[in-house]
Structures are given as C-alpha cells and as structure tokens.
Image (cartoon, rainbow, N blue to C red; front, top):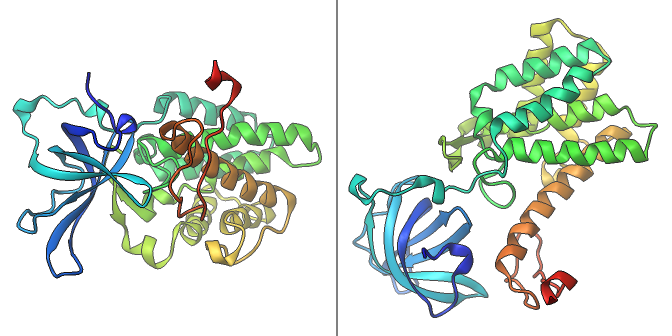
Amino acid sequence: MDITINLLETGMRYEGFLLVRSADQREGKTGGKYLDMNLTDKTGEVNCKLWDGTVPPPPTGSVVKIRGLVQEYNGRKQLRVEKMRLAVDSDGVDLSKLVPCAPESPDAYRARIEYPIECFQSEDLKKIVREMLRLAGDNLEWFPAAQRLHHAERTGLLHHTCSMLNTAEHIIQAYPFLHGDLLRAGVILHDLSKITEMKSDSLGNVTDYTREGLLIGHLVMGVAKLHEAAKNVGVTGEIVVLLEHMIISHHGIPEYGSPKPPMFPEAEVLNWIDTLDARMNEMEGIMARVPAGAFSEKIWSLDRRLYHPHYADDAE
C-alpha cells in the first residue's frame, strides 16, 4: 500500500512520488545552501528539506520521486530528503493521487450556483451575476480558493462558494428580514477576482500571485470587475453600489484588507460566513492529520494550537 502524507509518522522511512507546490534554495546559518520544499499528495502537504546545495529546485507543479526520513520540527512532520529526482513518463505516475481536489465535480458545483441565480427576483441582479461568471471564464472550473490554508485544492473556489451558499440559506431562514438574493449574489461574487489575483495551473496549484494581485488585491479587483460587468449589461443604481460594498468589505477590517467595514446586514453576514467557511475547512484538514487526544503544531494563521477531542464516535 502506498503511504500517503496524512499517514506519515515520525521515524518512518518514505519513498514515493509527490507534487511540488513550492521549492526554494535557501542559505543556512553556517552559509551552506539547502532546498526548502513543500510537496503534496491528495491527502495533504509536507515540508521537505534536502541538505544538498548543489541540487537545483524542481519546478513548481512538477512531480518528484523522493526517498527520506520523517522527522518532527517545531511540532510538525517534516521529510529529510536523502535522494530526489524528477518523475519521467515511464514512472506511470497517476496525478489524480497527487492533486488535492474538491469533493464534488465542477459541473455539480456549477449546478448548485445556477439554481439560486435562476430564482433571483431581480433581473438586474441576475444579469450582473451571470455576466461576472461569464467574465471569470473556464478557469473557474479548476481554480483553487487560496494558495495555502483553506480550499487550496483543484476546484476549491467553487467548493468554497457552494459551501458558503449552503450556510447562507440557513442564515436567511433564521433571519427573514435579510434580503436573501442580495446575500446569495454577494457569496457568488465575493472571491471571483482571485482568478486574476493568483497564477494557477490546471491542477489547482498556485505558482505565484500576479502583478495586479500583489499591487491591488482581489477585493479592489473585484469591485473593478463588477463595475465592468454592470456596464456591459446596462445595470446602474444602488444594486451595483451594494454589491461593490459587499466585495470590498468582505474581509471585515483594514488589517485583513477591507478599507470599509460591512455597513449593512447582508454585508456583515457575508464577512462572517466567509471567515467561518475558511476556518472550518482549514480545521477539518488539521483534524484529519492529528490523532484524537493530541494537539496540532501551532497554526500560524490562527495563532494557536488545536486539540482533536476524543469524540464519542472515535472512542467506539
């Protein structure tokens, strides 16, 4: 049986094929060079060190065969690589085993997005959302939601969006005063400009951020794209401003990139369910690799360690 990343244990020897998410040559404290790599399979990601400065970094998105020893560093599993080479065609590597993917197909997610759009009461809202999806293009089929942390997987952006739509439906039922269609539209549109903020291959592997992504970011880029979409379909008025505000404010506070806080209920809900869905997805991945009764390493994005409780099902 092939050993996957989620099954790695300290002291275990490992040999197998992994996908390169990032690889950089770095300089140690004594001046020696080494490779610092993050490699993935379908179950997760592991940091790897190759203490040989003569080996060039493998290209991002390539597949490498490695042999090494599983160690622990600062509470996290790490592979000390002893030998590495690029995979060749004759290896017969099955990429589907190496690429983290969303649990459903792009077509299934598309259908789940299309249904609420078709039910929108406002034709203007329907026109704007459909035009934004058209401008997003085919990249939406496989684009991840992030380079790291949450929904960093093939089709992750659609996964994140549909998960948020599901949560939004429950909140709309709990708080009937909300404008449901406005909230649903905000969920669908809020992250679409990540497609032009990041560079990703068709495997959902983000290789870098675009120049516009680094200088402007997907919130401001999203507002600009919404303005373009509204102009294309001839929609003006407050509905455009409301959607622009939802995009620009969905990170909540300036420290997280939003120049304006949410200033009406649907914008507030969008901010909270975006944060909730991102954190739950990240925590789900952490719980999958941490045994029951154990603590994770410190998670820098959360600034704390997480504990995996002994749930009743785990104890049976």
